[in-house]
Length: 369
Image (cartoon, rainbow, N blue to C red; front, side, top):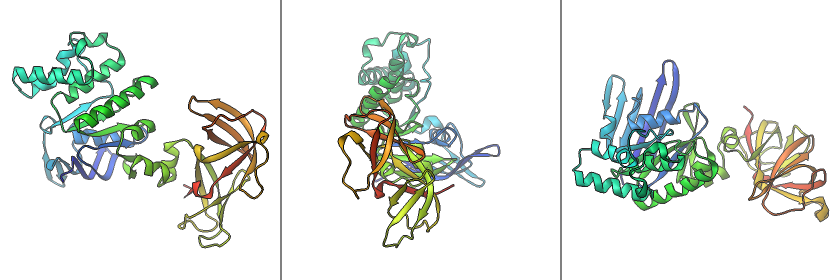
């Protein structure tokens, strides 16, 4: 089967500053892939090269089996942006303020020289998809931020593209509206079956929308995989730290990989944590370890002492923050602090003791940078 997009050995610099360094990835038909990473990592540059808004210095981009860009030494083949059959939804929506909702959506269809009846039908269908047909005659300046985002989405979908590119399209919306638009966008993608490349720095956005995530750092790909695989097995300390919701614990790894007594992380703040695996890291290696907030078991001291020898250690509750779906608890542990996510309602009191337990398989160790 032909992929929706194939990117091979893509390179792009601005002056002497490399923005994208030899990256390769693909998007299957009907799949949403997110480029996730901090500002300046090269994700938007990659998107603009696929859209035809930038020409790479080297590499090849194929869209549905047809070469859109091939640059290799002196040889250059570049298909114009308007001939690639690609739609793009921008961060700032890029709507025409002097046009009505209808004319904004119809604009892209008209550019493709369809008949009047086709323009009317495509525009009507796109506005009905995003539930805005009743506002067709309203000016875009009279719309809310969420409505403007829907107009931009309708315009992108009106001519039925097989590939839609999203450049941080929800970043200007408030948290509640972002969640709603995320679900609407996912439902539209399921219903229409288009392929999509989604650029974001928001981890929740990427994990909530994507079939696969490509995490970028300094112009190269740090890790690629399904959201679940990346969360469960980050490939580097950078990935673990960027994804967030994990405690960073620095220390020294003791014990050889084949040691029968097990391996232990002697943390800089006192406690010793059991670890498993990490065969590439030798005895005595300086490491940065990451423990997800939700992987730490928490037991209030008022519930009674846990059974001895069961891996529990004593800490003290410093701070309790209610987050609606859970509690985030800052616990003093040794001379440091750990953050724990408690999904159950516990009798947690600041200043009181609590017991912690961290399973060896939940400690991800990486050589210290």
